[in-house]
Image (cartoon, rainbow, N blue to C red; front, side, top):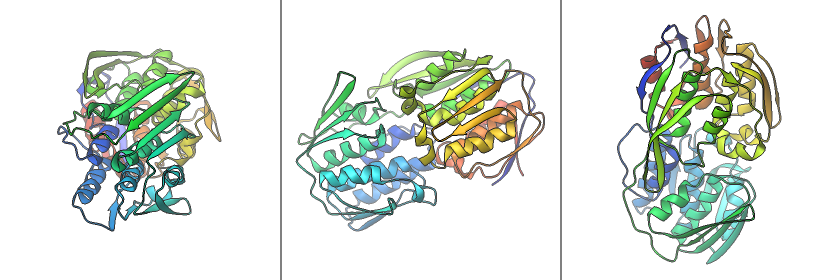
Length: 415
């Protein structure tokens, strides 16, 4: 569905908001059959919940439709491999073009029989015998790969040690510890060792799923470039391995405070208070990229309205997301009219400052939810309507995104 978007408010963005449930925590909980709190769920969570229910039915030779959820597919593949059942995982057109050899290779080393189509979905898993003990050096810094292997060991009841050289998101480790799993995390000499002994059972417990930080990031970004903005985003997950983007924004002179910090099932939760801020450019160190990979398209938009040159490298992983996000960023920035360069693993953008505006634009989302949402925020700085070709993908992570934008003062119409 194409839309026409504008923002004409003279008072900036005000108010308090809540975002959909955290995809990472909700999907891990669903795979393990755990009860969670109600809230707005993106289609990725819904797809994973449906697949988990099929597994719990006890049927064999399952065909599980994971929709657009790369997280759901990769984690579910590991869990199924450990269960020792026959199953096939399929997805939509976008998911069917995402790389899966990164999980298939270590799963095969664990003993799984797993088959791909030229390295991509569908994923076929045959009844397998997982090794009693397995050690793996995480070659690609990816929480999805790490979690896939942990869930394979968990469902198989075996032992595993994973060594990661770069810190990745730790939702799986925190969840398993909440469930009384025999899991230890040891940091030494710049590496992290995660050891799980799944011969010992876990305890089923309820899980509180906070708001998704990656969704909150879009509201944060909107407030930062909307003059006189002052908002609060409530009940957001602020896991330290997820909020590197906040540190980047603070380096860019963002006025952001985290308030009312508390904890549930080992996850930190808080309210994020954001005010309009004239931003300055930033040069990102490569070691922070895995922590903020989902927010880089949004950073590219904010960089357009910052002072100075923003530089990002080491982000080749953007090429294999729901779209080639570096190509998508290139198409997006052409509408805004700034000087930029997109290369194989990153981008440089020469910002035009907080007062810069452009006239209009026809934005291409490439069917990617994050690109569609980034494009919509550009209306804050457009003097006329902007047009976005396809926004249906937004429902995968943030189904009420446009509803919240309207509450903020945007005008959204079908084009």
